[in-house]
View 1 (cartoon, one colour):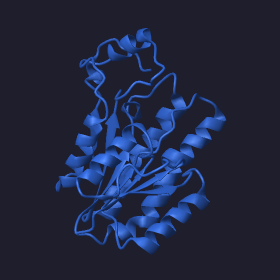
View 2: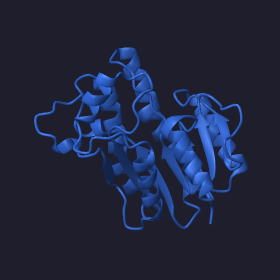
View 3: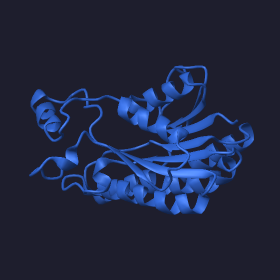
View 4: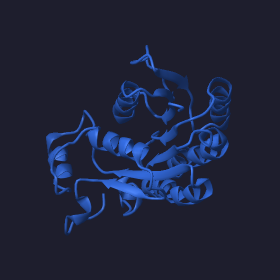
Length: 232
């Protein structure tokens, strides 16, 4: 069974923790990120430098996989940017959140089709389905990423399962003030900072699930049940 998984945006924070957990579970992880770590954190994490907003970098990544790996067990689209609203930032996030996953799913489908079971997992966002008044462009591009799950699930069934994970707050930024931290935690029913664990658990579930495709797993601590809370 092929054990190679492509994870985008895996050089820091949640993506890095996910890559480490996958490597420790016996997978070979291709970590495709804009920046390389000085050394790989695990022998089975193979670093590939790529700015996925650029077509030429994506083509180089596709060629690398075609030349060095006989197939793929999964693609996990984790690369993400959370930028303020502007036309320029909308275009950047569209390229990363929509164009890049679309391109890679299309180009690498033949390599995913080789194992008996393969997975494509889109890491979207809790705002994908509810919007965000303060980050309209981010929410819109993540919503497009979530919608593509439906089309690719139908296109690649039955051997390739395609699903989404919609996380809410996982890890606050290091420079967050205590006031911001408390206000943010209060938006959920489960008022604590969970770290990367919920997303990693969801990924491992989907890698094992055999009757799930075209679906979204929401891990937001019950934010959708908080009455009277406006979108971010």
